[in-house]
Length: 265
Image (cartoon, rainbow, N blue to C red; front, side, top):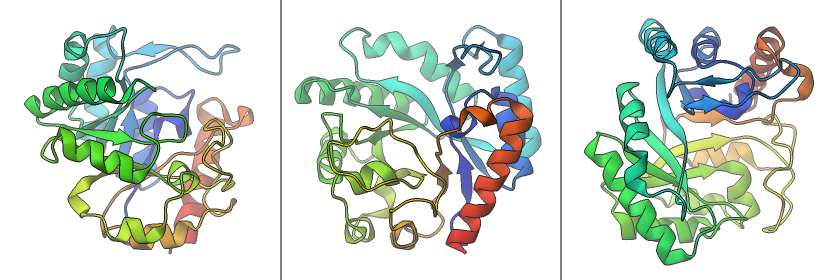
């Protein structure tokens, strides 16, 4: 398979960041996406943790990354906002850079188009100053709804500091075609998330189940074949309640990775 696999944070909801990194390595994956904190999910299923507040945890994550050779392909949790100025996120950018993140993911948060563009442009500049880029996602419920709109936004901000996050579920639900992927400049594709699901339509709820590749209606094999070779595929599957907790998640995610590899072999 020409594409290495990564494991997105949603696929391991309920697991701490150190365990996330080490499990990804155990399963033969090379990348992870991580946020800076997790709120408790109740019933002991989602333990709270914070890389902002816990210096010891930050050291453990850095050690796990170094030990395993895993890198953070995408730092998560950023968005344009009319409540938080980009400059107020500087400490988070510094933290991601210290952890070795390659890029930061962001979205427009439904803001008015010009306001979203200006905020994302400032965030992209902050990322560039720290040796990262900003990878912008589009989705049915956002202001930036489709690949053409996201591509136009990235070009306005600057291709030297912004790129695209292409989520397979959102891409097909917003009318994307495999030909659009094949025609893209490889350098513009910063991050790729893969899952399966129902095709639905452009107004479909983005919270609907994200299925294991091969379980839904998306033409994932054609989607992946259209990508430039070597792009990491971040597996982004909704974790069922029965798989919350380290041991249950370990078994479940191992099955997800195996079935993804089988589909794309």
